Image (cartoon, rainbow, N blue to C red; front, side, top):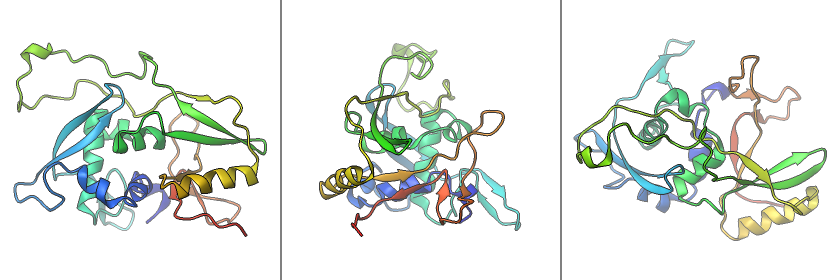
Length: 238
């Protein structure tokens, strides 16, 4: 799978390490539906509640350089559950384009419903610090209210998307959490032993117009891909 075509697959791979939870996100059954309609549970970080998102099995595709059709959002398109989950995310955000600008932390919040316990560790000149996601009512990040008054909304009636917003939140550094490499290793190992979901991520940065860059391989030859996430399955001291 080419780095620039990975899309949300690294985040989905992390949640796949908890298969029981992944199955519970699909409201009716994890099996293929003969009607082609699926209900997915996602946590709406703007409204602070779980939402029942209904999607069908039609997904946008693009033609790759080799002529093959690939899902627009990324991935190889061979796993139905990931395509449906991605489409539910696109519906939550308002569009696939908005979903492209989503960040791993809020995505994991939407998949797990965990808000306060999701944190982020960042490196700065050899030191690492813990950051927390801010859930304050920032008008640029919260979802706007629907145009249709709630009392006029009828259950089961499909409506056009009225709000487009990427799954992104501000972060703030947590005071007194500075750690160096060996300390961070022990912190991560203790979290892993506590059955925490850990996703290692290297930001790929933005281009000259401010758009998030697609994944690309580390020029130094480390084998890592910038802009992708990696599920941490174990931590071993060497």
